[in-house]
Length: 211
Image 1 (cartoon, one colour):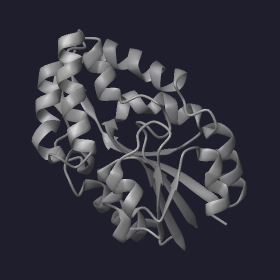
Image 2 (cartoon, rainbow, N blue to C red; image 1 turned 90 degrees about the vertical axis):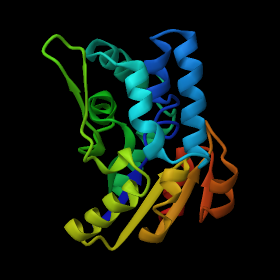
Image 3 (cartoon, helix red, strand yellow; image 1 turned 30 degrees about the vertical axis):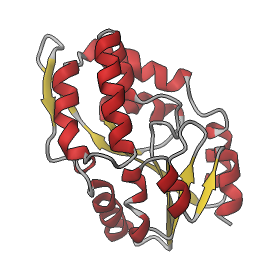
Image 4 (cartoon, rainbow, N blue to C red; image 1 turned 135 degrees about the horizontal axis):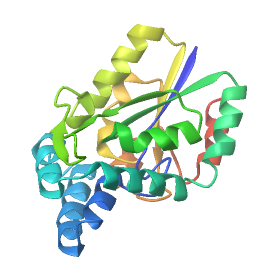
């Protein structure tokens, strides 16, 4: 078995889900959240520090999550569908590992026919208002993505496992994967460019690197 692990936000789709949830709360909330997201993705502040704070500021409703879920599909990386078809044909199994939210990512995963998602489940009250998140989910903290990669390796014993992503939390997996491929169509982060085994700007370049 060979596994390709994809980040979701700014990789499989152009958007950052947390930013879009914030945008629905108004421009002031969006600006605050966007700054925190960028700081975390650039490695300037630990994800642990901001994960709970961002959600408490936004209080995302179930309805808002459905709305942003559709945005993921509307802003899908333009070569993602074809690329996934090619890598599946070459014997690779795609997995999503994301610091985003499970319920928001699921429709995109279904659209791309990706069956395994490792993300952060949200909780809602019966009226659809925000009730917190699964604090045990590894992607909600720094070092969480490498934990998931390690668990995938233990579960499947793949002959190769490759990570594709744009952020520092993705780069953290480098020691656990066969190859780390940085992705820069939507965000170019200096450290990711410097430390990635390869750096691409379109997912259509991925199949060649997997040969």
